[in-house]
Amino acid sequence: MKYRRLRLGVAGLGRGFMLMLPTFRQHPGVELVAAADPREIARTQFERDFGGRSYACVEDLAADPNVEMIYVATPHQLHRAHVELAAAHGKHVMVEKPMALTLDDCAAMITAAQNAGVALMVGHSHSFDAPFLKVRDLIERGTYGRLRMVTALNFTDFLYRPRRPEELDTAQGGGVIFSQAAHQVDIVRLIAGGPVESLNAMTGMLDPARRTEGAYQAQLRFENGTFASLTYSGYAHFDSDEFCGWVGELGQQRDSSEYGTARAGLAKLTSQDAERALKETRTYGLTPTPADKAPSHHNHFGLVIASCEEADLRPTPQGVMIYANDRRELLPIPAGHVPRAGVIDEMVDVVIHGQTPTHSGEWGMATLEVCRAILESAARRETIHLQHQTRLA
Ligand SMILES: NC(=O)c1ccc[n+]([C@@H]2O[C@H](COP(=O)([O-])OP(=O)(O)OC[C@H]3O[C@@H](n4cnc5c(N)ncnc54)[C@H](O)[C@@H]3O)[C@@H](O)[C@H]2O)c1
Image (cartoon, rainbow, N blue to C red; front, side, top):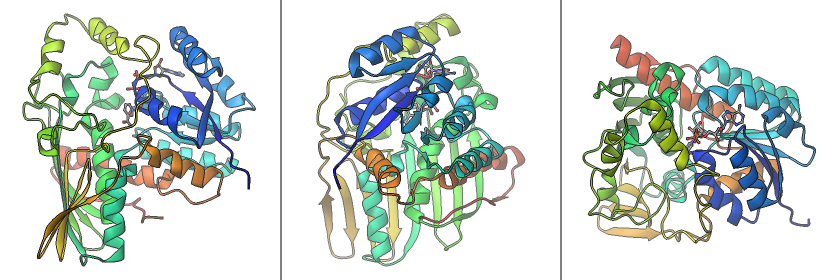
């Protein structure tokens, strides 16, 4: 069969889109043909960069007959409405993490996609990264015995990056549970493979000036007996990129002598409007479109260790470190030419080759259920039992 490219439309040309942009430009399986965003400056930039059509609203994008699939990268609270619009116009969808803010919204999105006969995927999340997929593969093969325990830890400056006001309001999807646990839970679920049975968690709002959860610790029990510990702090001081050879989350080499730059940048601002304006200076249309370059490392999400009976497996920006009974070695995974290539690989497999997605709507809903259960367990000081969990496809 003649090779063809998936014709993708983008809803929301913000920061999330900018992080996927190098992938969209360089992956041979996809072409950007249209976009929607209320910001005219972003639409103009899109037309300049891609020559595609641009619209002020998602409904017009969804009605564009040239678009096959829509990547929804609008703010969390709009995900449901935009997925429903895409499905109503017969478009496949990939919606950014977190899939939505409530389980009811997730269920409605899944139903909308099923009724329309279109595929629904949730991502990007770091569980698409090749080193995590390799760890899962080693576990499935049983190379080092059964998986018993997963440890995940990430310390970042998430809470001190410039934010829109709703990104600091938990009720509107703000804080690290919706934006960052969505990655960490996804990774741990991928590695463990099976449904989460129950969890206990605590959360922290440690800065009175930014009143949303900036940290959490959660203990997860999986149905297959595996247990996991997840720790996240967005208040760093300590930065866990130090554990990853000063490679950043996006696979970029960082300057280890830099310290406290996010906090210092924020300290200069005097109002929420100034903070929103600073965020916008980093977004599409207001900052130069990054030049294409091959990644030097994989993306990562801090320290993750999968403890099997015969080895500890540690995904790294270079591959997988294997700490076996008799030796320690790196299983290298070349970073390839396209960052986050796994996201488009899965889209193409699903839309063009009709395969079942790993990162399906049901998968995204199960991750959101765990995220919401972290909040609930912390608030009620109780163990939460999960009801909407899935197995790996
Ligand atoms: N996977 C990742 O690594 C990653 C990284 C960043 C953001 N994200 C996700 O992307 C989503 C957006 O976050 P962000 O940081 O890019 O926010 P942002 O504010 O930078 O961008 C949002 C964009 O959506 C546009 N928008 C707002 N309302 C719209 C509407 N009704 N129709 C069309 N466009 C509209 C805005 O103008 C803006 O360009 C979130 O769900 C977030 O979790 C994912």
